Amino acid sequence: GQRPCHCKTMQLGSQLSKHTLASRTAAPTRTKQALPAPRLLPLHPNSSTQKRRESLTRMNALGALEPFVVPLCGGLAIGTLSLGKLALSGKVLGISGAVKGLVVGDRALWRYSFIAGLIAGGFALVNYFPSAFDPASTLAALPLSRIITAGFLVGSGTFLGNGCTSGHGICGNARFSLRSLTATLTFMAFGAAAGGLFHTAALQGVQPGLIIPPPPSTSAVTFATSVLGSSLALVSGLALMAKNIRATWLELAADFGTGVLFALGLGAAGMTMPTKVSSFLGVFAGTFDPSLAFVMGGALLVATPGYQLIMRTKVLPHPLLATASTFNLPTSKTIDWKLLGGAALFGTGWGLAGLCPGPALVSVATLQVPSIVFVASLVAGMVVAQKVEQLAG
Image 1 (cartoon, rainbow, N blue to C red):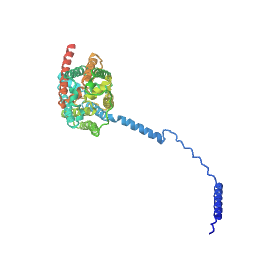
Image 2 (image 1 turned 60 degrees about the vertical axis):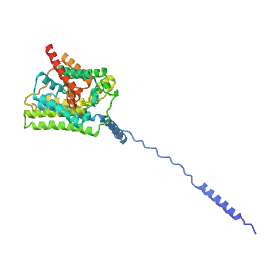
Image 3 (image 1 turned 60 degrees about the horizontal axis):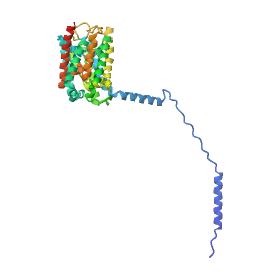
Image 4 (image 1 turned 120 degrees about the horizontal axis):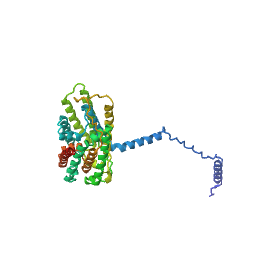
C-alpha cells in the first residue's frame, strides 16, 4: 500500500490560481461614464407643460361655474322673454305693473292673459319640476302676520315706485335708466338690511356662510336649457308669424305664452324658492348665495343689447304684433320720494319673506296658504298705496 501522491495536483492548482490572478490583473479597468445632463425645456406659452397648466386652469374655472349653469340659463330665458315682450307688443315686461294696471282700473286683456300665463306656468312647475319650490314648511316657518306685512309692503312699494325686479331690475337697467338703477340699488339695500335684521334666512332653515350650490342634476340642466330654447323659439316664431298676421288674438296668445315661459324661467332660476332669495339677501346676517346674481346677469346680458338696438336704431320701426305704431317705454326721469320710498318699502317686504310679485304669483299654483295670503296682501297694499297717492295729490 503506497500513499497517493498529491504533488502534481497541488502544482496544477497553484498554476491555475496564478493564471487566473494574472488575467484579472491584466483585464482593462472599466470606468463609470457620466450620464448626460437632463435637457431643461423652457416654460414658454407654447410649451406643452404650460398648455396643460392652462387647460387645468380652464377646467377648474368651468368646474367652479358649474353650480350656476341652471340659474344662468333661467336668467337668459327671462332676458329673452323681456326683450321679446318689447319687440312683439311694444311693452315693458313688468309684473307688478301688470297687476297695478288692474288695480287702477285698466282692464286691458293682455294683463289678464299674461297673469294667467304666469299662474299656468306655476301649475306646470308643480307637476313637472316641483323642485322649483321650497317645501311647504319653509314659508310656514314664518308667522302669518309677517307674510301679510311682507306682501303689503311689496304691493305698496311697487305701486309707488312703479316697478320691481323685472320692471326696474331688468327692463329699466337694460334701458340705462338712472331712475331704475336708483330704484334697484335702493330695494337691494333695503332687502339685504331687512333680511339681516330680521334673520329671514335663519328662520327658513338656511345655515350661515357662503353657499355654493352642488352641481346641478342632469334633469335640472335639461329643464333649464329646454326653457331657454323654448323662449327663443317662441319669440322667433311669433316674429315670423307677424309678417303675415297682425291680430289681437295673436298678441294675447303671445302674452299668455310669455307668461308661461317666464314662470318656468323663474322656476329654473330659483326665484320661486324663498330660501334662495333670502340667502342672496342675507349677506348682513352672514349668509350669501350668489346664484341670483347669475340670474339678473344672464337676463341683462340678453335684454341690454336688444333694448339698446331697438331704442337707438330703426331696426324695428314699430312693434311686430301690436296694433300700436310706437313702443310704450317709460319716459319719466324723476327721482323723487315716491320712487325712493316705494323701492325701500318693496325691498323691505322682499327681505322679510323672500318673495317678489312674479314668483309670488307663480307660487299661487302650489295652493299653499302663505303664498295665497302673500298675493292677497300684495293687492291690498296696492289699493292702499293708490289711496295714499290720491290724497297726496
